[in-house]
Length: 117
Length: 111
Image (cartoon, rainbow over all chains, first blue to last red):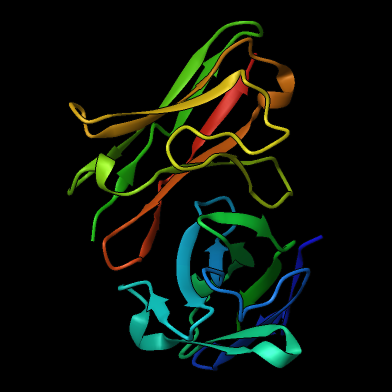
């Protein structure tokens, strides 16, 4: 079965760069049509799509955060990494990664990242 | 980019029917599929409707999706409401450049 799990720091300081890893199993990111996306959710607020990487290496970013985001994949390690630069307290959120077939059909449990000095 | 606007909250009694709307700000609602996700407190979202009206296996047929081009909106309808339906619901779609957008979410209370 498909599973995904996010990992990374739980606390980062303002201006630092956040790096989150999504480790998955049950599918290959080299399979045509497959993607892995990142979505975040500030406490008590709505979901916000951040980025998506496809099996062929194509990448998509949220227009409002594009300048701060980089998404990469390591197909052999079954991992996708999201980096976000210049972190700010407003970036405090639960960060989810999700498998995309034609939609986000499998989600990780999420990881809470707090931005504070 | 476009926005998807949902009511902040809706409430209804058990056994009744409720409809949650999702209005697209620009571009046609019919041009890209709409998905609906359910999120219970403390849990990750799960898909309840994909590609406008399709239900993943395991989702009861009490939940249904539709789109209305005249109002440029999508709707999630839940009939025979149960207390277990109480959750936040998010619509989601994407644009022609495959940039994904979520609605602001609707809190469903089953009183």
